[in-house]
Image (cartoon, rainbow, N blue to C red; front, side, top):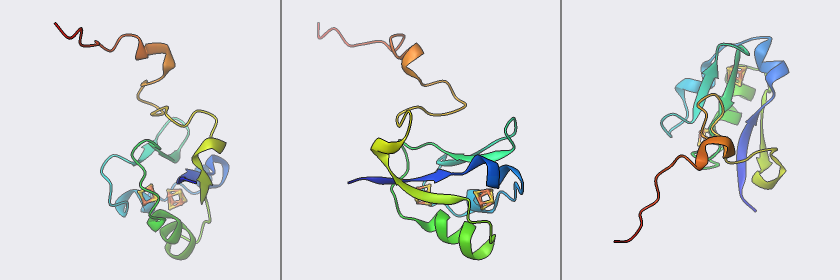
Length: 98
Ligand code: SF4
Ligand code: SF4
């Protein structure tokens, strides 16, 4: 079962420390949404290493990140805030093989 990090927006939004964004070893995976004032995960890039959970629990002391089974996410392959969603996926060119 594949697990990815998931941010509790209510907890994170009340602190917005941004600490986790400096520790994820994968580039552009923990991002910060200034609109919601919360970190969020680009789940298609998350490798499930749990470093961010340790950072939020033990350094930031906010306990806002949990690991969740990817199938439990509402839309696991949405890159939130950047629009790569079902609504635009048909715009991606497909090679015709000729
Ligand atoms: S470390 Fe925790 S509280 Fe701080 S930005 Fe990341 S998820 Fe939010
Ligand atoms: S589990 Fe690892 S790869 Fe995924 S967001 Fe957290 S630190 Fe980054």
